Length: 68
Image (cartoon, rainbow, N blue to C red):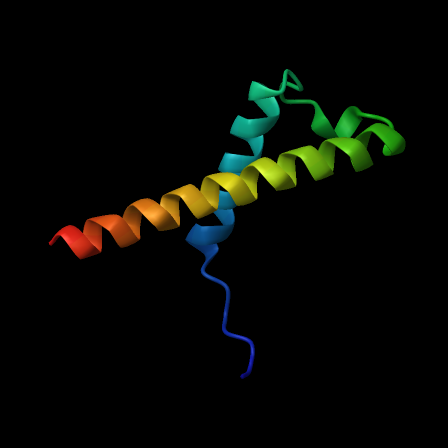
């Protein structure tokens, strides 16, 4: 299976979700200003929460499709 082109709207939405999660973690808008070691730990936390949120969205979509 070849790579599909990435939807630019999806990239924007994922970046917005990343920033929302960073704000929830108290990181504010200055993620790029963190030192590299802190960035590594922050990226893991933000990535894990993004994955959890995306799974929840997918589950809700599946439930909605089954109920229609």
